[in-house]
Length: 111
Image 1 (cartoon, helix red, strand yellow):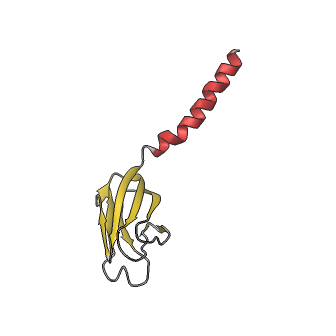
Image 2: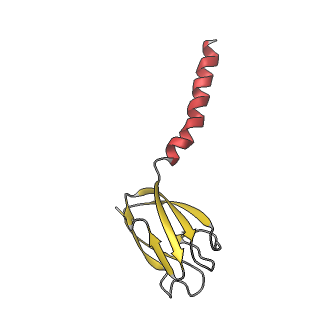
Image 3: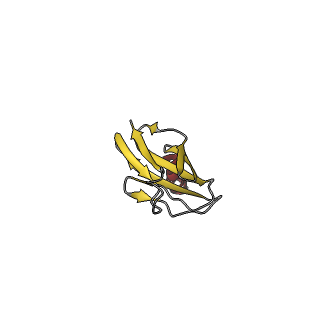
């Protein structure tokens, strides 16, 4: 009986571990409109950061930072991008041709 209890405790710990890890990620909301990004914060503590892209524009956009990017999403859609950043400055942009040049870019700071 003791062996079953120990195995159940180990199984419960393994199942709980991913939820605990994801709760430590910082969430940054990125609102995309035509040729403009508005981030809920321009900086955060270094570590795991989840950027949530919300397209409130009328054309497709994506979000790229630290060499990773979301898919291009249509109006009214959302996408998530989780990255692990060391302390530093990270350029971000929309990679749809012409969008960064029109203003969809900036610098995010990981402290």
